Image 1: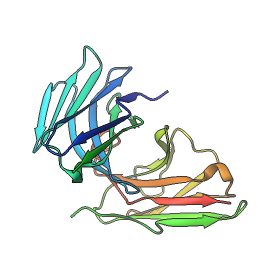
Image 2: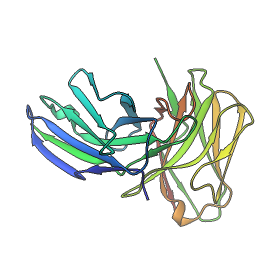
Image 3: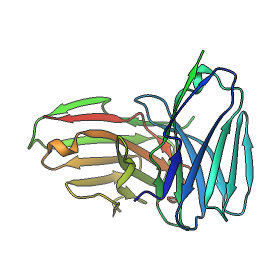
Length: 111
Length: 113
């Protein structure tokens, strides 16, 4: 089974609204990353949060990590049509361990 | 700027054919990865390499092999393509081992008939 599971599987919002998606995982992690994938393209790294961090910001992105609940959230503020994409979380259990990707959240931002 | 390129965006092959997927990175990264992506299954690691001529199996290596003769190039080989290998194949590279940021190529969508 996948280490990271995103929720919801799909999200549809209006331009300007905020989009929030969650990632839950099963075992302890070294770090958690979020990636974006535009339709039919490769993944683009968005942000990495380490297990000893609780919150991180990058532009309009805000990521939180709650290791006690084994979950993370990605918030996109003031969404734009260009944010339409699939978003994946990826976790690594320990130093030297491979990344495990979740199934992704498909986000549609309507103009 | 970081760049990972893959030899083909779309590829159609017949069952039993030998298929080569090429990936090149220009960032002098030590680590390179091959994933396949299927709906509902996310990305699954096929093989990775942490140095020239070094390779390690990922989660689903069966039916695949890899080659890393030069640092910048990592090839995925389907020895005898089968229809269940129809998928999106993504190559990635990273400066640090597995758990740090990975840079992805645009992907190759392979259809095996």
